[in-house]
Image (cartoon, rainbow, N blue to C red; front, side, top):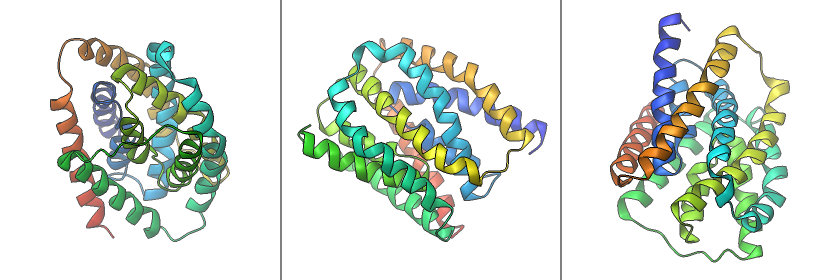
Length: 241
């Protein structure tokens, strides 16, 4: 990766942190899809997962008072160990399998947004345990659990602030679990370290800007933009299979 490419990636990540805050999420998949322009799928999954630790810390700083801790507690009971299992499987199974899984979940996410399909899910202990386990395994395998977590939390009726805070509190420990499975299989590069360290202050600033925007305008335009980016990225991955 050249210096000019790094300078291109970081502003996109900053913009993505604003969009993901206003739309309630999505930077992870945007970072993942962007990374595939420069790296193979496994390295892209690892890189985007490390980036998500930074933005999750930033979001927690701004939205911690709105978190539903009961939801978080039961969601991560199985979500954490299954995230580790999914992260382990990433380096065991053929490379095309996580690629196909990412494409499928991207298209499902886009379809749910376009068709406005949002079935109601009761936040019972059983449902939270079940979705946490499935979400963890999928997130570890494809590097991004928000494609499933966001629709599930929306279907449980969370308001915007509580939705963002609760989603962040769920994502952080599950992300740490899958990263623990990734680390032994990753070769660190200078480019990866530069991007990770540079992204932290940008994410903090971007989440702060996004929270201010959230107070004044509708998120529908940003959600449409997010949907379009995910759709285009999924199409690109589809043609590389």
